[in-house]
Length: 177
Image: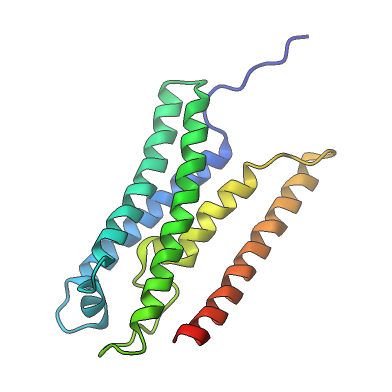
C-alpha cells in the first residue's frame, strides 16, 4: 500500500491564517486610534521606530496568510511550510521587541499606556507572539500514540507558553517600568 503524500497546507496553517487575518484587522483598528489627537496611543505612535514595528508586524501576518494561499494554489511545495515557520519566528521576535520598546518609554513619558502588553502593540503584543508560538508548537513532531494525546500535549505546551510570556511580562515590566 502506497501512503498518500500530503498536498497543501494543514489545519495548522489554516488556523494561523485565520488568526493572522484577525490580527491584521486589529492592526487597522489600532492605526485609527493612533491617529486620534492627544491620546496615549498617538503619543506612543510618534516615538521613533513604532510605526516601523507596526508595519513589519502587519507585513509578517499578511505574508503568513499569503504563503498559505500560495501553498493551496501551488500544492505540495515544502518551501511554503519553511517560509511560514520562519515568518512565525520573526512574528514572535517583532511582538517582543515592541513589548520591550513600549516598557522602555513608560518611565519618562508624558503618557501612560494602560493596556500593555496587548495594546497598542503590533499583532496585539503577547497575543500575537502566542499565535505564532502556538503554530510552531502545533507543527512540531507528533508524539507516538493516539493523535488526541499528541494534540492535548501540544495544547498544554501552548498554555505553558502563554503563562511563560505573562510571567516574563510581569518581571520585565517591574524591572524596566
